[in-house]
Image 1 (tube, rainbow, N blue to C red):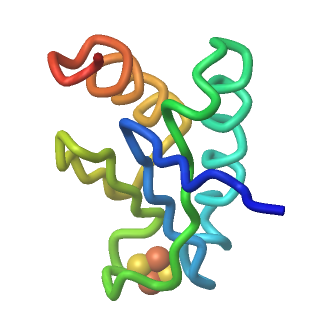
Image 2 (image 1 turned 180 degrees about the horizontal axis):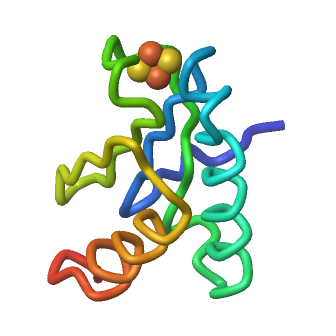
Length: 94
Ligand code: FES
């Protein structure tokens, strides 16, 4: 029983350390995951939860790769806009 080792083209790392979680980071991550599902991008784009990234004063923190865009004091609107700009409309999308 072997499962394929599939990797996504893009990853959004969402900090879910205690401070970011408290400030809504986890919910924003869930919203992004829902968008990925709705847009049929599952497998191509992935949300990965991380431990504390040591930037707690800027919570909630997340980063969009491979464009390497980092958001701090992230709101749902900011995350959605960055998703549009750096996941959907990025040059790096195959
Ligand atoms: S909990 Fe997110 S940076 Fe520390």
